Amino acid sequence: MSAQVKIGFIALNDAALIVVAEALGFYASEGLEVTLSREANWSNIRDKVSYGLLDGAHMLATLPLSRGLGLGPTLGHIIAPMALGANGNSVVVSSRLKAVFEDQGAASLLESARALRQVIQLRRSVGEGPITLAMPFTYSPHHFVLRHWLAAGGIDPDRQVQWVVLPPSRMADALRDGVIDGFCSGSPWPQMAELKGDGQVLFSDPDFWTLKPEKVLGLRGVWAEENPETVQGLVKALLRAAQWASEAGNQTELANILARDVYVGAPVEAVQKALSEGGAGLVLDAQTATFPWLSHAKWFMGQFVRWGLTSEAHDFDAIARSVYRPDLWRQAAGEIGLSLPLSDEKDEGGHPQSWSLAAKPTDILMPPNRLFDGGLFRSVPAEPA
Image (cartoon, rainbow, N blue to C red; front, side):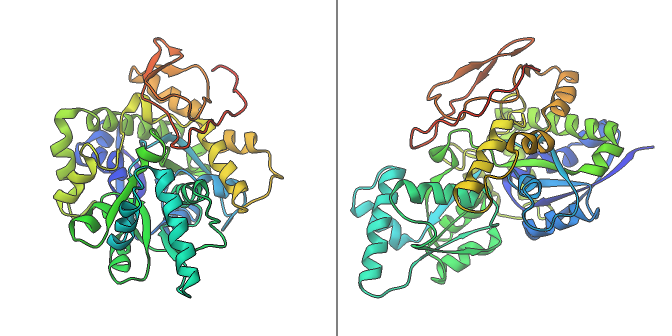
């Protein structure tokens, strides 16, 4: 009898592994009967996993960590046995704002942030309202990307910017109507905004961080403990989906699958624009973009502290280890022949070129790992696996 699993997802390109595994039968090949549920927002995802209405979900990389930090509803523990890729988001601004940046010759992220500081100062001097930016969830990578970018340009994100939370599919309309000045969301909605003339993409994840963590497979902790074999089957199915989705020859079919109404439900043109070179930079490679790095968890938790969302009075290493589960990834990945990293943590940033990661049976050639401001995050090294 097939193991039955309920998995939620949001209509975004970075749900690719979740939906491809259904569309191409990878779940079934692992003896799983998976029911997918498209959800309207991240609060729904969080609450339904918490209450057992879903066994797991396509989830913001920060969401299980916010639970571990005691933020928001605290019912239940959520674990992340794998990442669902890297990158995939874009920042969109109004055409008027983009024109201002271009007039000032702002060609880099740092220059655009400095130009925005001047816009904010000008608005204030003439009595206009603050710049308003939208993100899909308060405890989200989108929020931290925007704050990091603003702060690099000398802008105080708490005092000089107004924040709103909106579903990604509604952000373009809010930008068109002048309710917001810009937003950060997952693809293909930024590309949809650009195609419709509602705004222009200012930068995408790879411009901010070349291999930025974004989504994970989040599982209800109690369910995962009670169903270890099912968890392994689920991770293997998604890793096989990643192997398929990262093949260059499958990109057209991938876009067509994502564009289906039952999945992302967006025009294939927008989906393809986001997936193509120069788009949102979504990386789905099983070997280099699905390991649940503890250093990712610690970087994100550092952002929670930096922006006053939590205090330093936590054992961040213990939280990272209880939520992100590289041991479960290694068990599944080893069975399908992937190389296994020797450490649970790595430097984040500091690699402008491809580099070699120590692993067994063979080292892994990793893509560049660089932050736009040259920053380097080095967490306490973990013990070798």
